[in-house]
Amino acid sequence: MDTHAEDLSYIVRYGVTRILGEFTARGFGALPRGSYVIVRSERGHEWGTVLSTATEQTRTYLGTTESHGRIIRIATPEDEVERDRALLFEKQAFAGCLDLIRERNMQMQLIDAEQVIGGERLIFYYVSEQRVDFRDLVKGLAKLFHVRIEMRQIGIRDEAKLLADYGDCGQPVCCSTFLREMPPVSMKMAKMQKATLDPSKISGRCGRLKCCLRYEYDTYEEHRKEMPPIGATVVTKQGTGRVIGQELLAQKLVIQYEGQRQVMTDAKDVLTVVNTKPSKSSELTQENPADEGLPQEGAIQANSSPGSPLRDPKPRHDSRPNPRPRNPNGSDPTRDRSEPPRENGDERSGTNPA
Picture 1: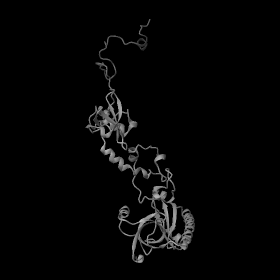
Picture 2: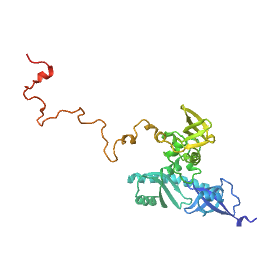
Picture 3: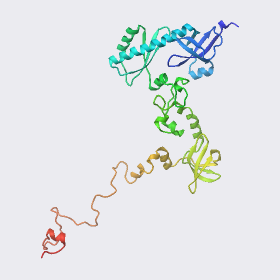
Picture 4: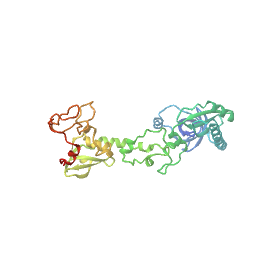
């Protein structure tokens, strides 16, 4: 078998950002998983680690069928010495770049520095909330290190991918091991899985929601669609009741029957779904249980026409029956004018003066 004429493809992880790519190899035979190789990528010569052979499944996972480059050779002891020298130079470059940033008082946070093997390129990674004009900084770095300088702005999750080590589960963080791209995660996923809503417990090393909340969400969503929703009226062997809770993974429902009796029932024991539309009260309780007991918006506007201002339910005018009319000067026209007016003291005491 002519191994020199045989072309094989491997999935290789390379760079400090742990980029995954497919690389072709010729003349090396079968490379086992974990082999250290030197690859030629679009950035130059880089140190890489073989993960597996390339297949249609891996190409589907990567989302591309094109090769990132080729494997030049298996790493030698000289390459290991060169890698250690590059790691030492990266620390010096990081410190030098940090000093230049402080001198210029630039609003950016330096995260890491990376040098491509052979000193062809020096890459700096930074985080900033706003756009930074680093042209003067690049000139200073090029004058200091005499290599090609590249500045890359990254996000908060990419910062954790570079610096984080282990998660709360005790395993290496997903973003630095197998995740190729960061999936979008929302609080809705945590609520559906009935996870705690304490931000300190559902946040990862990056300070955002944990990526693992996304892993089982599709399964929860499929089970939710197959089961009657909360608030639906169902018929089982035990009678007719209303769904007040769901256990999605266990495929069970909490059904409230007549007499406020609550029973945990298998979803397959539901004979008929009478009404799948949940009531407004159950929707309010499910959406915002903290607002339970507060007046609803519809109840406030029930007695007022659309677009009219809300009125005070207590009338502001005099509600006494047939109030006496008053003259503009304040006198009572029904009073007998021949009767002498009383003194103020007479009204208070109710007696005539002696």
